[in-house]
Length: 214
Length: 214
DNA sequence: TATTAAATGTCAAATAATTAACAAATCAGG
DNA sequence: CCTGATTTGTTAATTATTTGACATTTAATA
Image (cartoon, rainbow over all chains, first blue to last red; front, top):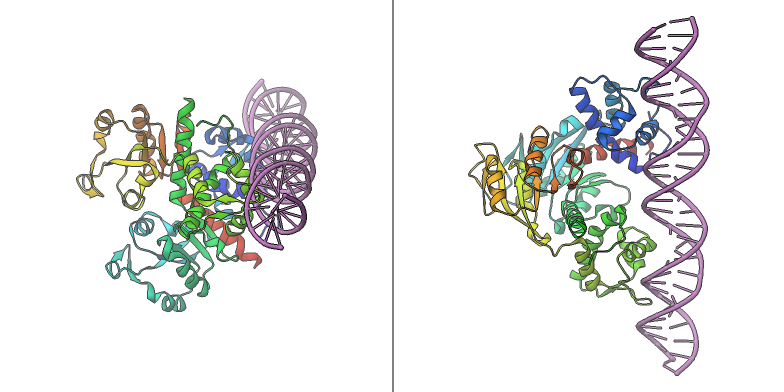
């Protein structure tokens, strides 16, 4: 059901958190919740929650609140968790391995069907149910299989060149862990960045910002 | 040098990216850069860059631009990268291990001096130059050593209880990878979250959002 | 069945963030 | 040493986001 209204990015960023809190409530057997109570649990204003949810339609009932299970499912559907995407991961170092093993891609619709690395030591090793293949084989693999998304866990230096190859293969969706700004290279791609270094620096700022005044 | 003016959070979030781009320029031997040229490379407006930098003082020179090296150092200093913090990591699973091995904490001022896990299989194993200790030993360790920050790579279920223990030990700064909202539990702590699940869901949204209209 | 308390959806107001505009300053070149 | 082209710092305008307010609806209770 494509909404023609463009949803503001701050709203989108809050959705996974709503989804998580609603999932917790669901697990605890809570059937219904008001925006006020949810706001207290989440540290938001009730007004913001109502405003956010109304971007997508009226899921609540006046005088009653929101039905936890149906709201949970609605948000899951808004996030597009029901879809299914063939996904490859490039870079089987510590981070790549952790991402492959740690994340439950399947529950979010991402089927990890290939892992690649250019280190001869890693090629042939097993991660989950997959064998790490040589990065040189990406072209063959992506021609034989329809690939919807790529996870990049390669060093900064390898990223631009690799991005060119993936782009040429028609891949337009990226979960980018590499310390490189993909979105500057192509303008018709979807990128979600996980820049751990940036995150650590922000922690650093908050810490040094906090200490003087306390 | 504590600034009394509170810096808006969107500005802070952009700082690491400025730092990265300036570092690249520095490596490439670029001596000076104008806000206009930097804006083109980064995909921002020149106005925003000038506005951002002016929160911290005038680092540029009219008619000339910004000296790359000194601006790089200034931003590093604003971020507090010069500080030094004793840090422990809890949870030596795939993610914890990857974070420990992959990140160059030291260059950001974080000295990783302890790793803990409650899985007997992991206790005693080596990560970097450290031996994984039993989580039960955290109290002893944190009494013997002044700990400034903790990295949480434990499952959601273990997080609340662990957070209580760390808080009781006086730890107030957290790099949180666990799928749990620490900041709701205590209000006088500094938390920087890395919620990989949330990030993946946002990718999912962007992908499903993109496809219908193209 | 009527009444009251509670809660949403929505519009308006307030706040925050970004962009545009421009005066003042600097550099480079003749 | 003057002139013109740049470029910053800064203020104002615009745009975006969040919060507040309230009419309307519902559930629960007597």
